[in-house]
Length: 163
Image (cartoon, rainbow, N blue to C red; front, side):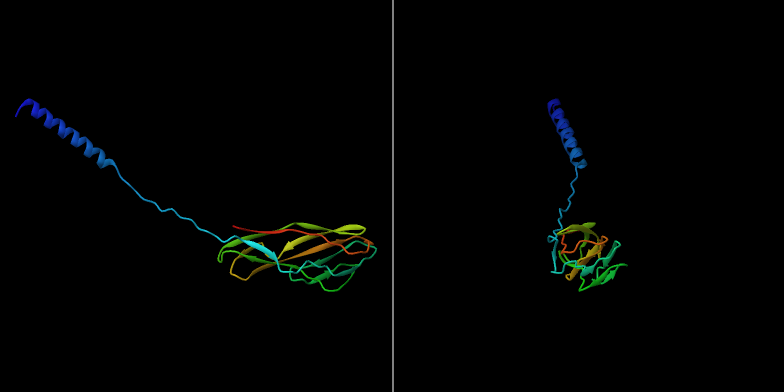
């Protein structure tokens, strides 16, 4: 065998070894790509508003509390009558998911000759959605001494968001 042939053979062997050594160090792997799609969560009024009923004021400031079930506790010095209700809300979204419920901390009720403030609270802070999802909002209304008569109204916000 000629020197040229031996050198070419040796070079080919060296190149083949280098290529196979590189290929031996190479590896591949796979991974999955995933997405979990949730229906948009929504909240709507069920038609029930927070109603403190009819209140006759006294010479001292006091409060009337309407709980999340709609029952009222009339404070000292007030005369409370009429139907009281909590505000009601329906929630929809993906079954089995959890949503956080938030409500404004207070609402200002404005009347013809003044204002009153009610501290608000929701019946639930979180809800695991199961298809029949609802919550309510009650509050404690601060009625001033000799509060001016008239119809008082104010609006508040609620929100739901997936955890």
